[in-house]
Length: 258
Length: 318
Image (tube, rainbow over the protein chains, first blue to last red):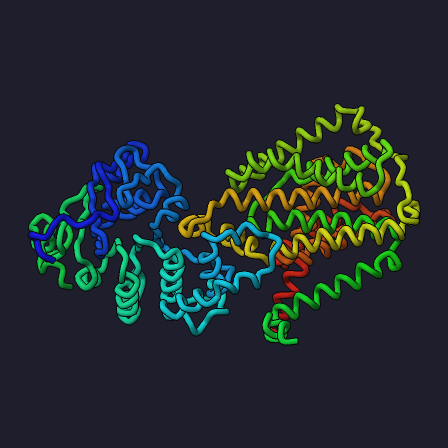
């Protein structure tokens, strides 16, 4: 990316975002610009307010002050499912799937949400098969094509994360928020998630919270560093990792190459 | 039969199990008034459907209503009132059911935004209001005396003074109500409903408005509870304040848990077991409350899935 290039389109933006919890300021005047089409990593020590920021961006929390804009439209006043319908989908830090449904049903139930089907209690389940091909394609994409009938509750931790990303993909979001997609995974699983994130990032914007710096180095175009709820630094990965304040606060002396 | 195999009837073992349960239950219910006295069989049908209706909300939406007597009771009274004012049986039953449904609209609207114990308390509060109204509004309900002696005029040559005839009419209504519940659970709506129950957060993040599904589930549940209440009036010929009492709300919880939630067949079996047990105990002059209470505690402690749930679990593991 050339520094002299014209200003890129902004996919997701936070302006002066503040969130107070009973006197505790979890998010303090955060300004964030996520460019259209980039992979943007949000990093910071535990308690820096990363997940709170995610919850604010996706409508699960209402900001005390400030605003969130998705492709220029204000979304901080909307409810989570309304934001999803405007093109922003998210995953959760703790694997969040529908445990009593099968793997395929998990994807199908998410796929049917924008259609009129979910409100039809009088039509048979087989009607969902109109979405079957898309469901199978998504399952193949996230590497779960071999176990469509498995109960989601019986999946391994890594498989649940794969399914989660698959569920998020059903909304074909323009902006995808991933909350620590590699947490609790071994090196093999991490490699698979990196490949998966790359694949789903094609043609869309991805924002991820991530602790593992090698994952960030591998994936992120730009990063934002949070500390005590405020933005410490934001910019291209190569620039930010050399910022002395960032090195002191988080990245460590070797600049993050663990 | 290519259409059949395309739907996976032959491949899907869960489907075969469901069909087996359906046939088993059907045969049992067809034979029931010949095995036990018809009025008890009628009670099992009405309470069975009531418990199925309750399970639709509790099992599949995760909402524990502690006020379902409001819908059962409103319909029971309304059906009796309509019969007492010269309406035909179908009109009275439809009127009772619609009355319960109409009552459910504001109750559902105000309650589905809360969950857990708060939801239970709000539904209980509404049911207590209905119970109070039933006690006070004696022109409609007969107050402490209840309603009885209302006509059940014959229709299409069916003599409704015969309990056997009433039973088979109710069996048709039961099949209708059970069919609605069965279809709803195994529909695109049912899947979305269960997704909302499993993880409300996750459901929201794929674009679902959880309250909307809970609202629909509540209406379906209350409507079926209303149909069950109308069947109860039609079957018994007597309506008393008991139908709106909080104990009725508690009883349907017990029946559902006993039979097994989210099984649909379970609540019917649970209702049957409770009513049969009570009948046997009353005849033998034993303390009904204590024995049914002990049975309930034992089932909840050792067979948490309920009778049908435990049975299905064992069959699946073999």
